[in-house]
Length: 531
Image 1: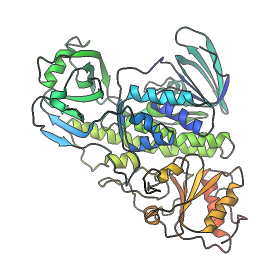
Image 2: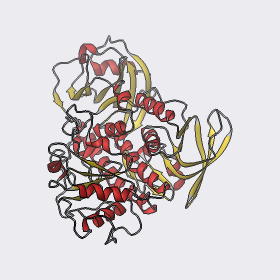
Image 3: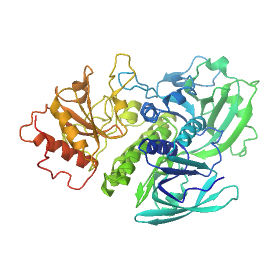
Image 4: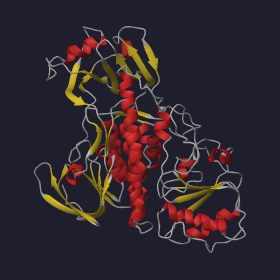
């Protein structure tokens, strides 16, 4: 194994979905990074399965959507309740999913085991020229200063020790994060929602589930859940702990009992005992170190929000690191990572717990958000967002489904930009701030003048799509400023009719606010052209 770079702008510790997604996004921004993962390869035993539509939108922006689609499982969305799997008909059937149509997103969610997802993300991340991705490298020491970190990493096969200096370190090292532990950041929430057994096995269940199994089977006779993980007849059964069988010696018999077929050929691939939890880190940042993914939050598997939330973290952080590294933004923009993501993580953990209780037959007393709301409906509130109506009702309140909105802080709504439905408004975001408007040379010229300054890269796009103004909450000729992570930073509902320079000044101030740049909110004259 070759020597690591001795210096890097960003050191990523952990090669799961969060770390690999961050590597891909940083490469898109042109930021060199080094990712180290103590594992030599992803575990072949699945730990999770599936990401929702918003995470697939992020994968699309990284250029890996097609590769992931090629390995997805053709499941039928929904949950079925049986006493045993072989006993038709199902006692109950529901759709716990974030399924979307192409009026809401250009992407659908993806059913794929975590090991398969990681293999695809790793292959693409390692192929980027700005990224160095190394497996079999474990962090064993960490020195943190206000403006840098110095990490000691060792080859896990007993090889040499190396030191790496980085401007920023991102801890994506999982539930038992060594980085989080070294920093002394506690976890808040419930560490024990119940202990369960986990049996990975191979068996042909097609006589009971057909060619396209449902997303999840709740088997009430054994208090178990059943999950299809791989196309070669691999499954996971999770059920109560049996004190008389701590090592899983009778795992195959437990599978046969849950299925209701005493003669079923079963190959047991793995067995372990695990504990569900709903927790979030008390802080997501400590100086130049940031927490993402399972290092930042733990959720029970109900709703399959874990991997998606991890990828959302990376999406929020990547562009901010890039802006800080190239001088467009200061440290205050990096502060908004915790301000924006920690409330989302806490709410997601609480709702995953509520879904977990629902599967256990204890539905929550209060209305919960839909899966689409959890996946796409969250709104960021921070110093980087210019809200245009702080008194407006929460667009993401429980009890109703997700409705696309361009209120500042929300995910920019999707609209198809071409008749063949190949390019979405979401495809416009990712590199720089983007100003959208449907008409008016004034906004375009203001954007051109602003983007002439290297410190404020801005692209303008004229949207020629039916329904754009209505969906984005503006009148014809209005404008919307969108961040690289696809969240609305600022909105001007009326046309550019600027005779005094106020409209252009407002846009420039909004850009400074989005970058948390010096002087944000204080500019009164832009020097930009009037209409």
